[in-house]
Image (cartoon, rainbow, N blue to C red; front, side, top):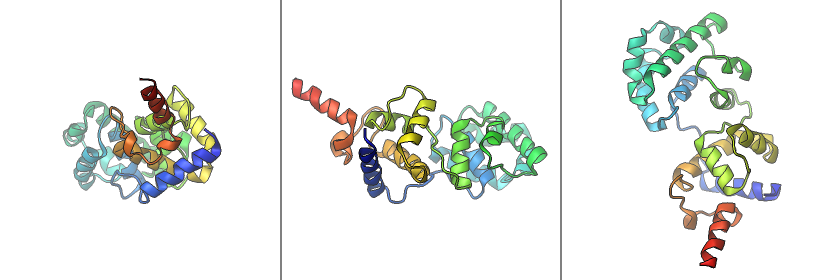
Amino acid sequence: MTKKNVLQVINELKTLYPDAKPELDYKSPFELLIAVILSAQCTDVRVNQVTKILFEVAGTAPLLANLPIDEIERIIKPCGLYKTKAKNIKATSELLVQKYGGNVPSVHEQLTDLPGVGRKTANVVVSNAFGIPAIAVDTHVFRVSNRIGLVKAKTVEATEEQLMKCIDKELWTLTHHLLIYHGRRVCKARAPMCSECTINPNCDYYKKSAKEKDKK
């Protein structure tokens, strides 16, 4: 896909989702970090239900670091994988207190050194909490960007690299949100709503499907 077509897709998505933003509820970089850790294999709706309770009890690194592990497990259990997540968020909170005075660092490499924090989580935090351009590739971004044809990649890492090359830096964070919105609402995993999709003129998947139908 040419850079002109990429921009056309982004502009159309901006028209469709003018209010695209994070769908996790948070009031601080720390709350965002914990919410993203909890969001692994869990919906944002469920995470928001859980963090509403968790952050009332422990909404800062010092408070969460001091919360007993069994209490953390009890609160976050609805998110799934709760034992691993509880272990990671407690360890991360303790490390934030020990190394950063309870604050969340804005440096990508420092974030990925925290337990349970991978590249995607770090990208979400730096872009949304600190305004540093980044493209976090989750399951929706990976699926939609490859399906449309913005990139042709087999891994999350390659998808991120290719998106960074074909999209202007100032649009990285917004594009991340736009692709997630589109993936959740139209370009769904099992049943993409291609006939209703307004970007189908620039979509490789749609054009390929149309050709196959013509052959039948």
